Length: 71
Length: 430
Image (cartoon, rainbow over all chains, first blue to last red):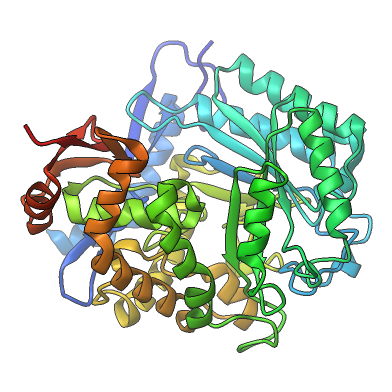
């Protein structure tokens, strides 16, 4: 039985697959953007509905200032 | 935590039965009797299996090398080591995770029983030996005869073995003689040469060699051997050659993954260090378990690998500042290893690179390669016969339309093509 990768609970009716892709670039002394080797990375979690809700709440809470700024 | 790892250095203990003069592990007397428990090791394997099993199809699933390290890892003894090897092999095989084992040792504690174990689990042994004719005096009091006797014993059990020579003032004049001796008289193929970085003393220590000295007495003579021996001359020389030819032949290359070397090394992602207490560090080269190098505990959660990647980015940012100041405009970048931040941190307790060591080695090598590039390719024709190939060391998407290509075409009647983004094939023109 597949389980939620965050809380370990068995997944029955719904699973939410979220993948974060990381890529880091650095500005060189020549004023150009250069990708940092080693950093084309992705990491995935498969969440139950409860963990997903918590995940969204956490994002919303911690990044809300940024959203207001962008608006 | 181990999702991106292709090497995990398992530091079974900081303790060692030797007290070599320049060993980078500090305060060994404080660690007498320290040993990683089987419970910590089991937790590590379980976590490794979980992380590698949850790698999705377009993420990387590379072979992971589990390298037993120390201190002296053979202090663990036969029973503990065999239990660890068996558990790791059983779990990794059951979950279809590609792996291999390595062990870095001074060879003094090796027994027939342990060698049979190494043979049965296909463990690659890296042995440390600095030289014949008293060249090993800084490393330990182990005699040349005893070392060779131990190597022969390992060979009897068909255990694959490579030797690491660390160059200091004590052996710089005999290192090439030692290399030749190990290859020709003892039958060792994998001899790797590094320069010493003494972390016990800030500044140039009594027995560290300078970058210029290392180039003139070690690198330059080895480069001269390239004309006869090709890439097989020595691991670090081979890597520099591959990087150089990739640079002059390739138009573009993809994202490269490094353990050591690279502008910003892969410490904390592709290589990590597990300490006896179950804490995970950026790599195994730190002389103490510094908080600055700690990633997390084996028991910590790590959703989206975010904590680990944040630690890597913090580390990368430190290196970025150094690169901007020292390296970004340097001509030797295509072949450089950009210095080791772990050794520098261990020596000075701040982030940096030993540019007085690194720069003369790579700048002089780069100049030599520029002067000799055509001669090298010409000599490779004789060593490897045409067509011969050069492994590019990283993915490459296209060949450059370059002066160099036109030169080898005109002078040597060779054409170059790219195969599978992995190697250059040199063929006779027409």
